[in-house]
Length: 104
Image (cartoon, rainbow, N blue to C red; front, side):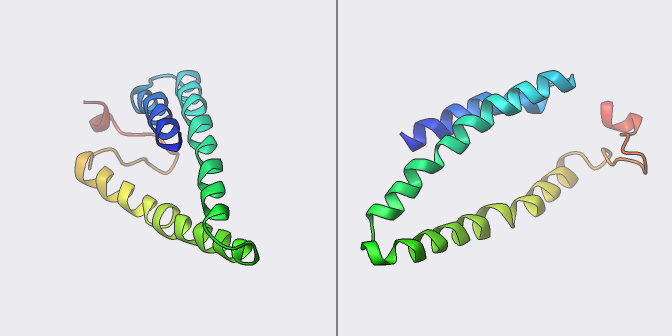
């Protein structure tokens, strides 16, 4: 069930990368985020059911630490490297606007 939710979330959120309007982007983002967050519930249940009752709090904390260490921490660096490699001209100015070279 978790894998299915992640796949649905990915399919819903992927069009956000090509959205040209703010409302469209936010709608795709919201539609994709909901199933991605719903996928965490089965993961938590799996952690709880895989250890003895007295170790559940520790197991959940280790699982949370692992998810952040392998997901949240390296993701901005990886995205930044991909952006620099694929679109080096798309750098915002001091006001956050992209230059004309980015839209070509």
